[in-house]
Image (cartoon, rainbow over all chains, first blue to last red; front, side, top):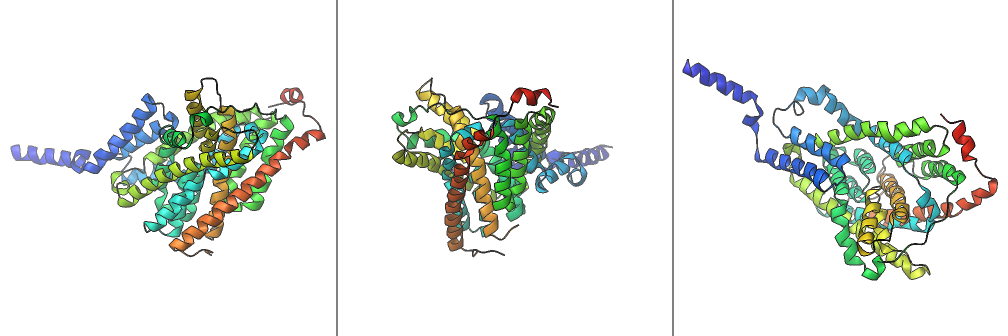
Length: 380
Length: 55
């Protein structure tokens, strides 16, 4: 009787996750919990971090439904991940972002658009770094694009260049985007003087409805003409923006910006978090990718600020160099960081509107870099 | 077909070309945007009218 009870309990134990727990699982659960903490307490991009953190925790409970082969092959989490892997979710995110975004700051101040390219040095520093570490050129390109600080674009380019690295790269991209309020300010302060951070920007000109309607159409044509490899993303961004600006399809614009976007965010965060199991994630490659992602963000932030300072050498009306770091994309996180860093020096220096110009240009900068990279690597 | 070799030299080459071309292309978009105020010579959109017939 006693022997049977022990056998029974052992069988029960073997069916629970406890029997398969590893230190790796505990580390990943701690990482997931930290993400939820940062979202709740520090308010770092809660829309992203809560879902990613929770799915990360659950996917590291051995034998959990999330991790079982049955669910991985058939369930909701499997299809959420397929939405990412089959490049359905990234264009839909851009669609929603387009419907939410007013591109007037970019249209009103075209000279700041160049910062959208300047802040992308990080892509290439990470790319070369990845090659030095032994990754193939295609893998290095996918890792480098983390520095574009544009989640959907990072996913898009990675699926084309190195699909096996998708979990690591998407996690690195979205985690660093969420952590930009921690990463960027020290670099921005290091590269600017107090006097530079105090520079106030002149009020931008008014952008008319006609210009706002023309913008998505013109950019849509340009991108499809010159950058077909990344056209699906930018085309959807511009379609969403056209819905917003034409004023006659409010219902569609609101759905794209709110309901659809919320559903997509849920799918995206669950899909990314569910790939963070210890056995696939705690590898040397992942650590290298995460480190290179950080390098990319630091260099991108720095090159944007330096780019703005170089522009000031030629401009009679100086711009605040804190705008430069907003060129790293990650709308609107990077613009918000520029705004907050400026506010810490001068409580009445509101940079947010001006920072949105280079921030939005950064989206195009990342798309252009990604498009050129795909073309040079012979990927369609 | 890959245009650049899968070497460190290829990575540097890819980076230089990509970074340089990105500047050129973004500058091109900047120039196009600088011309946008000219669109206003074509006329003005009546926003109230648009909102009235909207869905």
